[in-house]
Image 1 (cartoon, rainbow, N blue to C red):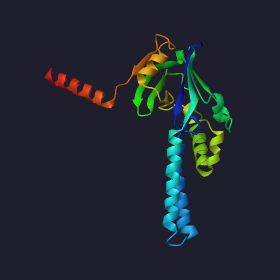
Image 2 (cartoon, helix red, strand yellow):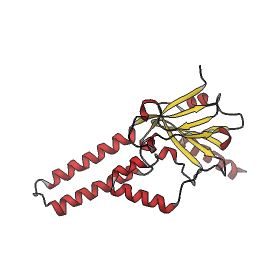
Image 3 (cartoon, rainbow, N blue to C red):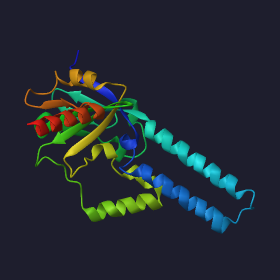
Image 4 (tube, rainbow, N blue to C red):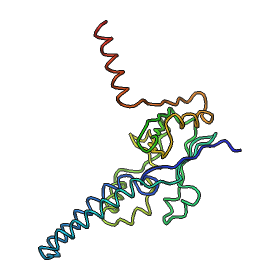
Length: 218
């Protein structure tokens, strides 16, 4: 059996560019304002129409924030990000792209517990950050996406673009605990690459409190 580990990625980052969900409230406000000031609906119909738009926007946000796609694969030569298998049968060439993260280019793997499973932070070594393009072009692409929602078909998904000054990929993995993820990755990663499992924030707060008390006592 081939030595690999695949997992489902949660959220819209496998399909849509980063920040796409934040545009939905903007579109809702624009439609509500257009209906109120330009459409001039009857007084009894206006609140119903605005409420229906609000319900539609909330439903769309909920569905897109909880979708799951087969877009994470760890092998002996590194991590692959991007849609795989049947999930690749989608419109838009950019959405079918994949990104390979070789182990030698990675500095650390951080695993944190989340309500949906685990979040994996892949930290890149300095000098290994991919080219993100000019800020001006990214601003133009964001503006076009705001004006024409279908433009997202021609943009790279957020999963393939690192954040935090291009040195970190943040990957939300569905239905896996941090300990299960660590055990699955350990046989694949080289010994020099550290896998850090972060404790829950109450435990971290308690550790900081204990540390501060020891410092004060000393």
